[in-house]
Image 1: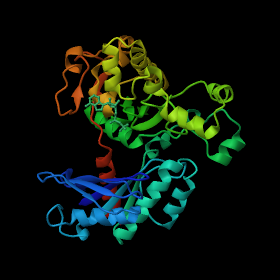
Image 2: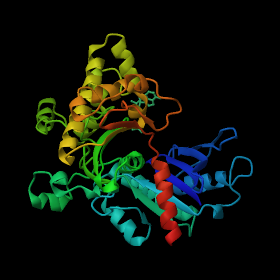
Image 3: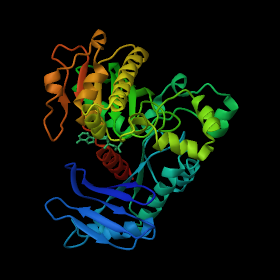
Image 4: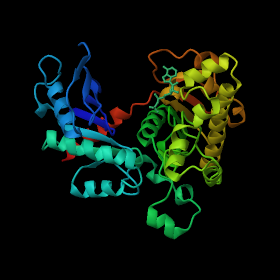
Length: 401
Ligand code: ADP
């Protein structure tokens, strides 16, 4: 089945066209600068990249241009729009309303509207992307796949914050967790590699990228995760502070005269690697600065390693054991020293990395075991593929229709 996977942002619409019978990506690209001027960057394997500046006043027009490009005799890869059998949308926040992927209907849209308050920066563009696709591709099933859905299995003691119940209910405050599609994919791949019945497995998945989250997956279901009500919680990230003492927030607001909206921007954009190192949000720049003798950059990397170790240990305790640790996403797949630093000293838990393998993972990155043969806990690098999960869910639901 040909499935178009869409990731709609406020001014961009990234897409991939999958053939789910082979998992082949037939085309991928991005409609950029929507609402500003408009540009499509489009790539079909075996053909030159196509870039065109075209007016995109809104997401509907961007989607129309994207469909026209996919079906273009020169730059495209399909003959007509009818060859697109389903569209899968990546949705960042499904609130308490969605625990699995769904086909869009009026009720689904109404529930997604309720998520606006929880993640306005993401939900508003997602709605524009969905409506754009419904306009440009009428009659083609639209499927929503949520970053929060895989985490809906957390027990109440893991997702409840210690604040009054009335406020929790009124504002739908709880730990939601994010990157669920990635945690689901890599834990699913890891499950297949363990010589155990699925319901007995205990896996920690470390999605370490610009945004990072770590999850405890017991018996194939999330038991806990580091991100919370928003994707600001958990480990240190590129520009996000991660979990800090909540009292620091009003303290800084008062001392530095920072209003609430700016405080949120500050914690999301000015902290993390960037704030600690003063150099960059990018792990590669931080490592280079550290190698050049920058102590603040060295500290930023040490903080991440320490936190990874702390979360692996605490999640092993929460699950009552550990069979495997998985590293994925930009940093998890590409930075051996973070994998080593994040697991060093955990030999008492049965984790033993092979430094030789860890430092020499073949490229392009494929699923690789980096633990020693005798390591009780298996440690793997598994490249994530959120788009493939979205395409498969869309295919599954569209086939049922
Ligand atoms: P996002 O969360 O935005 O999807 P990524 O998963 O791409 O981000 O992760 C970005 C981080 O991964 C950056 O800190 C970057 O340094 C690191 N990274 C990405 N690709 C590589 C690479 N090929 N080699 C080393 N580090 C990489």
